[in-house]
Image (cartoon, rainbow over all chains, first blue to last red; front, side, top):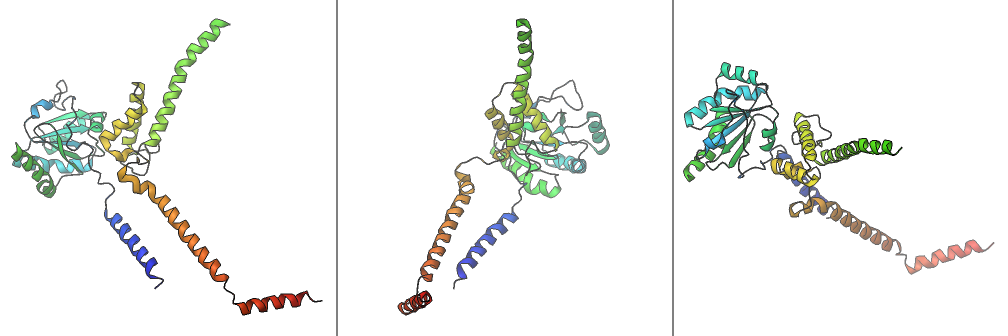
Length: 175
Length: 142
């Protein structure tokens, strides 16, 4: 009888700790969810004398993919992004994060360019405005220019189908 | 002599300002968490993002922003998680209060246990008392 209370206390502690272990401490929600997407006033990768124009994206549900040629998972997701964005008609823009512009251009030439346009964020300052923690990262932005979803890590066909497209479709139907 | 002093003062004024900025930058860097290497502060971490954050702290302080504004800047981008020590608010009351609650509960248990022990020790029967007294008195007789 005198062991019942300590035993219950132990079981309760074990349950709390077991629950804690199930959680991923890296799965931080974006602080920018439902906030206006920060302005990207940066030169284009293909045409450095021109600036990226976010106003062009108004009224459309689009995605911003943060990438770099030095990042392995980014290189791997490029072909899939091209196919998926093309198939589902999602305008996809790139934010080339802390990269060497000529290497970035070479990579896109070699494996194919999934982006309508890529903005060059050489210092990573715009990435900071988006709360980027690591590349690749992908944001879904609605027709009014608000961030509605953030995916960290590479995109696969499965993630595209089960996480990103449901958000895109629900935003499209609101319009 | 006076012009010399004056020029020394003028020379040292910017140095003082730079020292003050360095101190504020260092203090802010220890208050902010590196979001990619979660158990390190921005000051401790070698991650490129932490270096970017230190540079940004510096730039903002040089622009004349207050410490509070700099912390708010990072909180708006990375969430409340960037505070290395979590702020005291309703959702963190348990976190901050739990050690004190546990301390009070522990003290209470300890006091109870001590009280129980001391009361059980003092349970000699009348017979035992008399015997003890007798033994003690016997010892007194030479």
